[in-house]
Image (cartoon, rainbow, N blue to C red; front, side):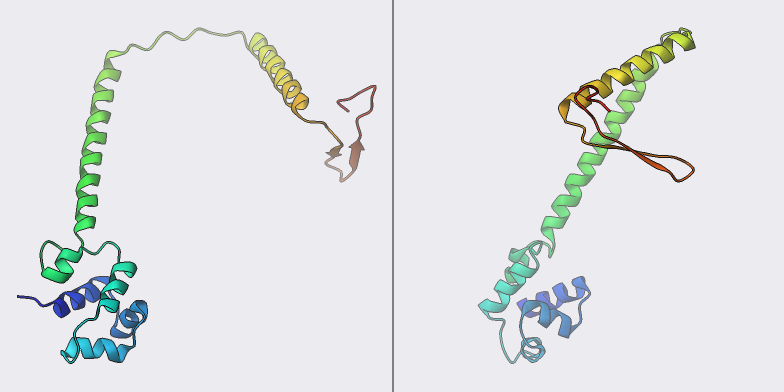
Length: 160
């Protein structure tokens, strides 16, 4: 039967920490940890509290009494993730099955000139709506030859 000291060592190994790193993380000296590991001292409440705070996913029933698993919370999360993934895949399969039953409507040809005019009108409408949301202070125009032109709106032409 494992002792509490054995289970603390198991936690350290599971975290991949050296004795010095583990002691530092718990806020104790490496000598104090060594004394616990060799049986000279028992783990104090302070050390158990430090483990609880630094390793919140540790199952304290396991750490104190040896009941359950070291990282029981992680196992519950993994089981929950498996359940979610299974639900997701079944939903995808249902969607694919229902998608096969849907027929794609025929595509109609659209006059390119009419379409581009509608897009231009929508674009200008969007710009006008957005301009009304704020006040234009200055517009800068940068040309490919390196020149810069600044336009400042006036009362006669509020947009430029």
